[in-house]
Image (cartoon, rainbow, N blue to C red; front, side, top):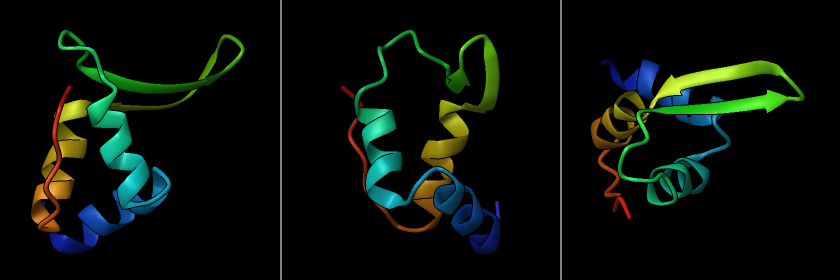
Length: 64
């Protein structure tokens, strides 16, 4: 993943802190982050991709 792609992904998720929160609060068996309005999923991103983007940007994160 390029730095530019990582930056765009993290920005779309609400920034570095929000992305770290997503990973931190994800249960151990969680593999996908989803945002939905009612029954309609508006965002679906694999947790591993979020973690990779943070790593590419040199951000440390801790999973709960």
